[in-house]
Every structure is written in structure tokens, then in C-alpha cells.
Figure 1 (cartoon, rainbow, N blue to C red):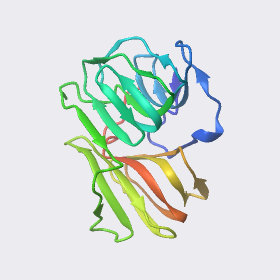
Figure 2 (cartoon, helix red, strand yellow):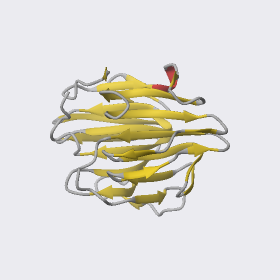
Figure 3 (cartoon, rainbow, N blue to C red):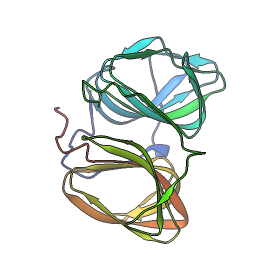
Figure 4 (spheres, one colour):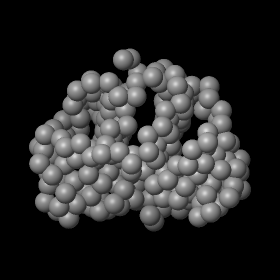
Length: 223
């Protein structure tokens, strides 16, 4: 299966406006943003767990990264409420479920093979820092290594935010809104910018809180 695999082009999915697709597990649905291959391949997805739903135990051979958008995600390692960011490195294993239901934004099979660093950050309590590049932006670093940087950014209302993606960038709107490229990006809208792309976003009347990943598309995934 191939979904949005032209990594050299600006790519947009307004996820809240597309249908949920059932998975093979009852009560677990998804909205696919990009995908290369089948269930075990490179994928960027929004996944919804109905109350009392679960997924079978599995190993993440290529790693898993997610942020809980609403509800509480659970596995044998703990409960992860809305706002929790998690990195499960390659060869990690778990049995995900949600007693009361939840929605997560998840990226699969996109880690370095040798990465063994697990990360858990509660973004609702962690301290944000003022960006040295723009006083209208606050940032919370979630993860950084030689391959990529991941963070949450808070954009003040009615501001111009320059987006420079020398090695690619992805943005997911957690709440609020912004305009870019003649489009309005609202909650759960997703924007992927290719290597070398430059543009500007204009935050909405209520500002925006976004998940953002940079530098991970220096070498585009093989299709």
C-alpha cells in the first residue's frame, strides 16, 4: 500500500475531514497520512481506540513514536493520558489498549536501526521555553539526535511564523489553527514539507499548538 509517498512534494491531509478506516482489530480505526507497505511498513497515522478496545501484542521492529491526542492510551508499561509523547525504540514490545477510549498520532518504522532510547514526556506539565528566533513562539523539546528533532510549539495569535525546512519538516495541529499556502490548518491537519522547502504560516485568532518534526527527510524513505 502506498499513501502520500511523494516525499519531494508539499503534502497536506486535513485528517478531521476524512473517513475512519477499520483495522483488523475490532474497535480500532485509523486515518492514514502516509504509508509505504503493509502493517509492518513505514506509516504516519491517526489511530482511534474505542472504549475497551485493544491491539494484539506486537514487537516494533522499526520503532514507534506517538502522542496521545485525547483520552488515555494504555499498555503493560502504564497509562498515558492526552498530551503524553512516547518513543518506543526498535525491538520494543507492548500490548496497547484503552479502557475508556483514546486517539493517538503515531509514526511507525521510522527510527534508526540502532536507536534504543525510550522517551516519555508529559507535555501538559513540562516547561516551555521562549524561542530565540521568534518571541511569538514557545517550544518544548521532546527528542533530538543526529537524524531529527521533535518538539511542541505554541504560536501566539495572529503571528507570521517562517517555516524553513532544509532537511524536511512535518507539522500536526494539536489545537488552534494557522493558514499556509492558501489553506487553513485546523485541529489534526497535517503538513509535510520536503527537503529545501520554505514557506510562512500565519497563526489564527486563538493561536496554535503544534507537534513538529524537523530534519528527518534529509534522505527520503525508499518507496
